[in-house]
Image 1 (cartoon, rainbow, N blue to C red):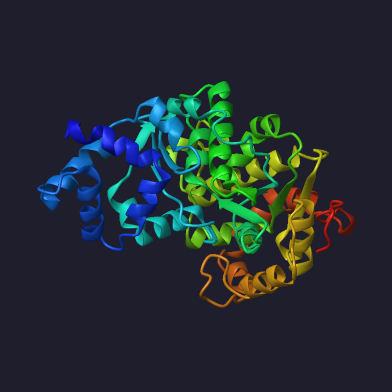
Image 2: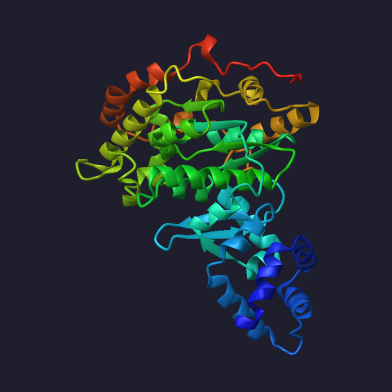
Length: 389
């Protein structure tokens, strides 16, 4: 397969060749296009698929990775192998989570199904300076199940914004204990530049994972001027949501143990006790951000249309009449299931735990929650911008 390697690398770096291949609406059509492009008309489909599989498994040379900047999206990092995986974007993401956006990219493009390049993480250094340095419009932090998916989804409806909601590649770089703080900062900055560079004319918003709150100092060190919002909620409701479907950080995932000691399950007497401890640790970390510049705290109960527009203003994002109409429609749907109408569930969540369990949660966490709930004058302050909302 080595004779196809130069042609494969040329394809990855050529906007014209990629555009030609993306016109193929089926795997068979793509294989025909590649045969013509690479001069291997006599080869069978099976031979070409095998060749692509072999080439996809090879780590790309740095010079090829550098030329992919602005064309390909780095989407996944596997710490064990040190490999970074790439795909072609399919317009700006609007899905509730970035994983769902990636699924859309693969489903709509035969090219993304058969051409799946990978590189070493350190090859990112070759991309430095290949795309403009990005300054994100805003960051969204949260305690999980606090309305952050609704907020990020509404902002993704703005023509002025591109929203990355819990991007796997960003969080996996952040939580890799093998990387030094310096390497994590450098790789993270390059990844953000590459992601933003794919959507010129749009300002980037990043919704981080709940456990990324422990990386605040690193992120603030990289982007000290980027405004941020931090979302909170009644702790009983948060834990009730995880009782139904536990998130990664509430499931005892050992890969998070080094991020903060609250993720260790060794001292917990029960699953609920462990989750109370995790939430307590995240709430304490969020409380430690008090007084940080350009930070607004928002409680789930206060997350309405007015507040979302205030966040857009804080992030410096335009919100015209058409934008607002799309946002209003988004607010009527379940944030995680956009095709389903939203139905309030506070009463159902309140009934999940026994009286003793609810009391235990409130004794540990209600005081912290009250300290994090913003007073009316603290709600998502509007930043002066040159355009009206």
